[in-house]
Amino acid sequence: MTEQSEFMNNVLEILSPLGDVITKRMFGGYGIFLDAKMFALVNKAEELFLKADDQNKQAFIDQGSTTHGKMPYYAVPPEALEGWTQMQPWAEGAVGAAMRTAKK
Image (cartoon, rainbow, N blue to C red; front, side, top):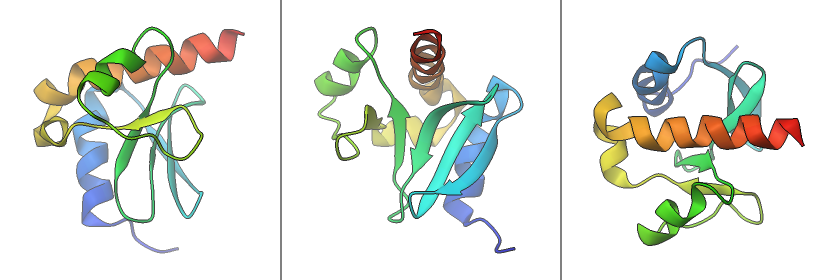
């Protein structure tokens, strides 16, 4: 089994206040899950994307974030990778989007 990159380890450390976050290799990168719901992904280029829906995607758009292809995942603003305080609103919004999508 290959070790995760320093970037991936940093992302998981930042997201740790959410709870038991797990990763699965997929899409040539990683899917990031909480309570069996995928709320984030890291692509091969080591960019973090968070799930968005009608309730949180405008915040990403306002920051000029790009999407991950046609999937409803948006790149996090660079400052969000500085720590939990900066990441919290983005991550919690993504978890909320994942939970809302799962209920449909």
